[in-house]
Length: 336
Image 1 (cartoon, rainbow, N blue to C red):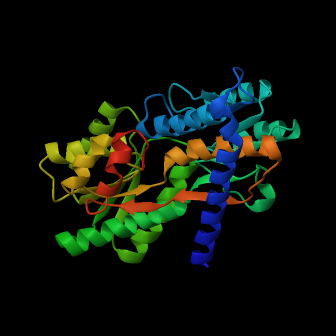
Image 2 (cartoon, helix red, strand yellow; image 1 turned 120 degrees about the vertical axis):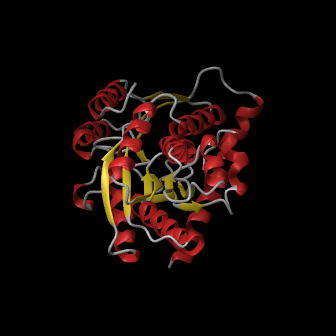
């Protein structure tokens, strides 16, 4: 079934690429001055975040290719209420389409249902609506990771490397959460905990709010390791936060005793992967999470094409043995 699913996904992607070339080709020779459509992308990602800057780049690249205007909105800091306000503003602008993650189903549900009722096509990316089908927002499709699988596969790979290569059994895991109220972290954590219970049933764990303020991340991580000396794995949910944690591990002389793993990759984290401080990363190809929804909205507006269900962009596991294949892409700003 997995093989069939992959073949279907490849076929869909091939069809989409062909459609993009077909519809965009007239624009290469004579691009109209005025964008044909305006699409809004509203996210919870903060400005300057290595992950979300790649998502924004993907969306803007698609906009340039297809001659559509992409308005990207995000809060100054992680704040569900503020994201909901930005989403309200996007709906109020009555655009040709909206893209957003369902970071909070409770907060976003009425807003997105209003947009759909107005006839605005909605595509979800990065964070799906995890509720039962009968309660989910009736959006067009979801483009992004399987959050539970990302946490599960990342933990499994990390624990295997700890044991096989370093002879270390995990004792206690610090799950360093940087965004309070982000449902995707709960899903990732649930997957990670499931893998931990399977592979190391005697190990303990604790979710710790580390924030996205990097000096504070370092302070909280350092303090936690001092107070919980049995900790030998830090499981992060963001690459730059993980790099900060890796720096703390090295500063405290705990390299080889305390390990790290995380979601996504930024250029700063690559040396930590290479020197085995960060044993594994899981990628979700965030550039595609920006690029593909804009393409899908364009194809829907132009010809009524619809792709229902899910377009998975991850998980993909990498470590020091496999990261070289994507380093160029990461350093050039296309993510992992």
